[in-house]
Image (cartoon, rainbow, N blue to C red; front, side, top):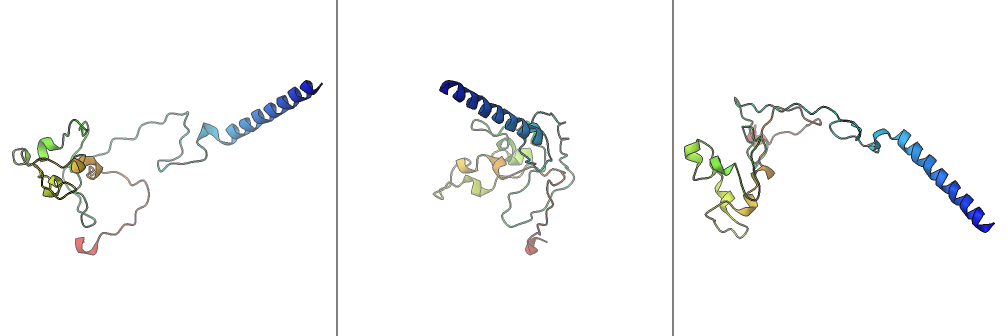
Length: 154
């Protein structure tokens, strides 16, 4: 009799858990937990169309908004490899190639290590260009921006 009561209670708990799980799924379709990203609400189970490719205007460059801002890249970087084994940016922007490629040279600060020693090659801490330098895309901001440029740069 004791085993029968325990089995009956277990079945009741299990049935209650199933009902609660169903309620959670019905109140939270797609399992996104009510979270909405900056790009909008999108259920995990549905596929939405990919965003359009951003345009990279070549006819103008954006000015700096603050002091020591890393310069923006004025061209597309699609298919540029910047990894531990290769850095496509250096093919044009290294001091060795910049003049021939008619490109901007890398700043001398990129050749200095943490101990302020000048190196003959790009410092490992400055090797991954895309950590700081991003392409200037003609893209709509994800959120409203009220940032004001530094007075001296206006």
